[in-house]
Image (tube, rainbow, N blue to C red):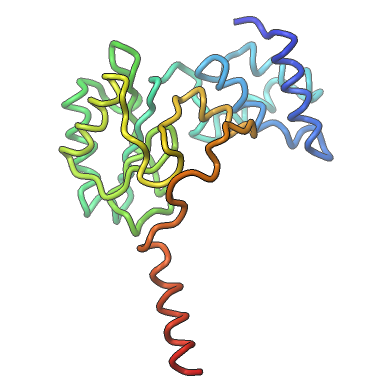
Length: 212
């Protein structure tokens, strides 16, 4: 898809946020991904031109970070944490169950283009293990069955709201635009930090109060 004048204006506005233009590489890659669903060759080329960089420099960033995809993913990209705590709490079983349920392997996409699947590293949500993410939104304390129900709802076009975060699950492209720094109006919705995350703070305050 060709870049429009509006696309170029948005890219210019992103670059203008930074004192050094090259600092805009990552949000610009997210913006390209929000247009096409993945980082295209044309997207890398236009970012390089905008920032006066070599294409290899932009490409290096796009291949280093796993949030950037170099081929199409699903409308809902599902990541299952398989790091130690999530794994022992059921993450490995969830990942295996979803592969069988969806009929795809790691980095695969369902035939209808709705769901793709990836095993992911720790997302700093160990207090909610096992964690499944969809378009980088959290679904906490999952089981094999709840994860299957989740992807079925996505394929039906009616995914539930994330456990924490926005009241609706944005699509892959929509959340890519958010990661590029474009406001979707959902920033203050839903639970931001739940009780398990705040428990340590509560204990600390209680102990301080008891000592005072």
